[in-house]
Amino acid sequence: MSKDESNPIHPSGVLLRPEPRARSGRRAGGTWKRFWRARDAIAGAVVALILLACAVFSPQLAAFDPNDQELMRSMRPPASYAGGMWETPLGTDFLGRDILSRVIFGSRVSLAVGLGGVLLAATLGSLLGMLGAYWGGLLDRVVCWIVDTMLGMPYLLFVIVVIGVIGPSLLNVIIVLGFADFPIFARMIRGEMLAIKEKEYVQAAVAIGARPFSILRRHMLVNTAPTLITLVTFEMAAMILYESGLGFLGLSVPPGVPSWGNMLSEGRSHLTTAWWLATFPGLAVMVTSLGINLLGEWLRVELDPHQRGR
Amino acid sequence: MQRQIVLRLGQTVMTLLGMAMVVFFAVRLTGDPAAAMMPRTASREEVDAFRHSLGYDRPLSVQFLDYMSHAVRGDLGKSLYFRDSVISLILDRLPATLELALAGLTLAVAVGVPLGMVAAHKPGSIADAAARLVGLIGQAAPGYWVALILIIVFAVQLHLLPAVGRGGLRSIILPAITVSLSSLGYLTRLTRANMLEVLHQDYIRTARAKGLRERTVYLRHALRNVAIPLVTLVGVQFGYLVGGTVFIETVFAWPGIGRLAYQAISVRDFPLVQGVAIFAGFFVSITNLVMDLLYAVINPSIRQT
Image (cartoon, rainbow over all chains, first blue to last red; front, side):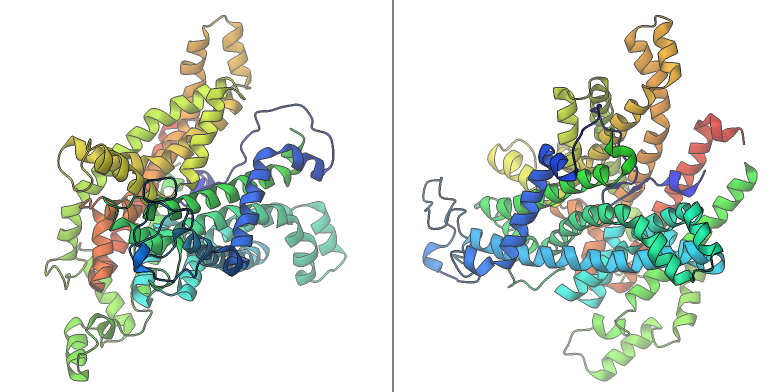
């Protein structure tokens, strides 16, 4: 009845256990060669690159200013529908703003939240997990208690409550999403660290009198990197989903800022007349999350020496 | 075994206490919830009087102990907006949420488990690809967006099902499909992964060697062993669904706990926000506890110790 068995899954969407691969037979070649064979991973990488490009080069890629209101062309459907025009391929909203341009600019918020939130969660989680596992005792108990408590809370409800209290803004969303997510990193890293601590090379380092900090950094942290990188990918996808959900409830960036969540929220009030308002930003969220997840799946197998050969 | 149960109970109590503290202090993060609840035009005296009427001018530790001493007796305070006790508001909406969570999970089990099994039967087949797709979509699709798309297609375009509200069997179809999605993804993946593992075990080979029919091997020998982690997963998911369907309940105007939480935040009704969050956390913890105990009961290898 160990704890890890009782809760193998975190609501954010990570199966904390490697899935056995269906295909067998050893795949030869280096990491790069295998990468080219992994079509899913390539699709995922392409999506990630498009997201990055959209976020960095939004002004160059978008045909219109995302906040440019032109009431003459308001509520125009996508180009392939009657009344649509190729000038605005995905249509326009009730203020005549170009949907495609807004989707492109919206990637900035998603990327910022994904990267910022995960960075915070991973740093805080790894630090606490590491310290708990290495020093044990009271510190470890306190870390475990915090982690259990936080993992027991419904994540989204907690995030919504805190943001509802402190008020929505980009920085607040990043901090709250990141902070609420650190326990999953802490638990994972702590588990890994406990296993690594027993390894002979760590024992050897202790025996020759290496300082604790140097052991942690040079021998232990390095060996948790594969797990950490995989988890970072999955959690980033999850955070992009959460951010748009918060935006959908009006609990993320201010209404004027083009973000996928805000667009979904605006589209919701025009469901009966203009389906394209909510459809395209949601599609952007889903494709992004799907792509990053695919990349994560590939990393999970690729970075795990036990799975790679299978 | 008994020692383990006692330990687990103690751990649950600690978690509940931790949750109550986290939520209690989270609601007071801005330092002064009274000011945040009053309109901006309120005068200083009005805010002070309001703060005093809520008892928010007492030291935090006193407020917390007072709140907890009421909470253990089932009193989570009074809602400012609905002018009713928090616990009765929650209990009013609990049936709707439970109904939705149950319907969603039933759907997820009914589709996910067979799909996972068929996928594991022939890895690399079309069924396997379908299972993988379901798993990925369940993980990546935002529930609130799927909800909107379902409303556009089935309510707005085809006029087949009601778009929002709760009333009769037809109204639960779209919300249940949306709720089931993420659990469906997990269940399919977990069933497939565990089936693949189990099918390589010696007892499966023995069963086949005895000349049993493939169907018997799958249903009697393999599925039974896969069922244990699945039951745990379903339990964990159930707990989270009760506390975590804020988006979906809001989209479908489903009168459950998630929507109550959102309403409470929109009107800045902090006592209600606090009560709902603590209730949801407790519900999840208790569900997890029950699942752990059940796990020990249904898993013979643990029962022995």
